[in-house]
Image (cartoon, rainbow, N blue to C red; front, side):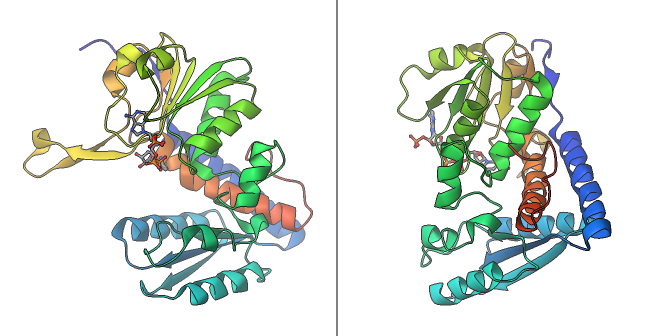
Length: 303
Ligand code: NAP
């Protein structure tokens, strides 16, 4: 095995600093304006992974001093009932952020539900208005995972201007908004996907690689340009017989050891992008609250 040379970008530590900034701003907001930001999370059904995320979001929301409102609905909730709840939350002045946990059960139209959220409260940044605002370089709510990646890249590099960035993956929640954010910071951006020809050559041109594919350890070190920064969004659970029978472990979309031997900096999995996502959700809720009340936005917590 080669020596690991890359700087490890510690997303867990960085997320803690984001949460501290949010908590300090929330405390000032309460003291100076008597306003407490509130985040409503709607969970439909009993998907075990979603239940874990929602619990974690609720806990961290309260820890930074915000109000958390959890709405747990039965898996067979009708679309009309879900839309009625979203409408109620849209009109509740104590709620500044609304997140409908995805995926929704199959009988519910995700696009319809997401687009029924007031865009100003759409802290996931998935509403079509926010997608359009981001794409045209206007003030928007930015999806949390790509926002977290951007924050880590800015923190590591300062300016990203003129860098070649390759985003692998074109999903609406990660790849596309990530590419828009990098373009907004004046990178030269390539979006790669399953039909991209000669992906290794495309990736070798990149100063910044963001991998959001969902295929365990797909990107090996010999695709990486020496000194490049690798942001690994992938979260994949694989068998780990070395840990014992039936055991598993989490890996990213990049093969960590071989990439770290070539890259200048890399995010580990776990402990890289993952923790930044909820931290950015809290940041977005604070931003939404400040905008709703005509107050200055927190610095360094938005795109
Ligand atoms: P997704 O919707 O499944 O999109 C995957 C993308 O990868 C698609 O655009 C697909 O291309 C592309 N792709 C698939 N196989 C490929 C290949 N062989 N070569 C090049 N591109 C390929 O996934 P997602 O929701 O963006 O999530 C991606 C990963 O990030 C997953 O592991 C997910 O768990 C993780 N994730 C992590 C966080 C976090 O908080 N850290 C948040 C969200 C997601 P096509 O469009 O051509 O099919």
